[in-house]
Length: 145
Ligand SMILES: [Zn+2]
Image: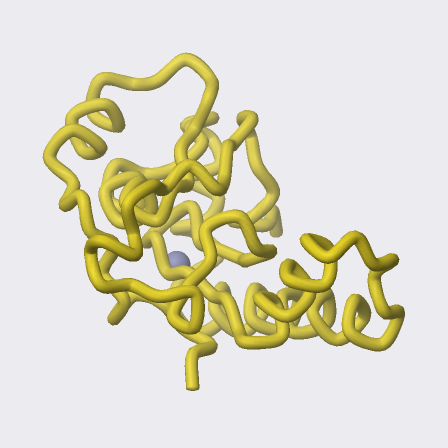
């Protein structure tokens, strides 16, 4: 089974701006911090530990090995559980054949979080990103307290 998370195209993260003005603090979500997201439905995962790792890097520290391992492990487990719980193997295969970075549904959810595909975009993905809310929907974010 192909992973729904391995990017078929280059994807940029961290592109969200104005989140604080929208009432989303760095305790809720940090666009530039490590995260995991689903290319099929746009579910997104970032824990406090992901944000702690980002803050440590911002301070110029070498990644604390235990924190780095924990973050990688949490992301891997989330991806596996999400794919099993939410998507069928057939659904994942069908999506993989499109060669798209995201489904339009996922693009609409992920764009406000600052996660956007950089490759040649299918018009349906462009349209989805165009009509997406400017403010990310925190109900789609898993891993919060
Ligand atoms: Zn999903």
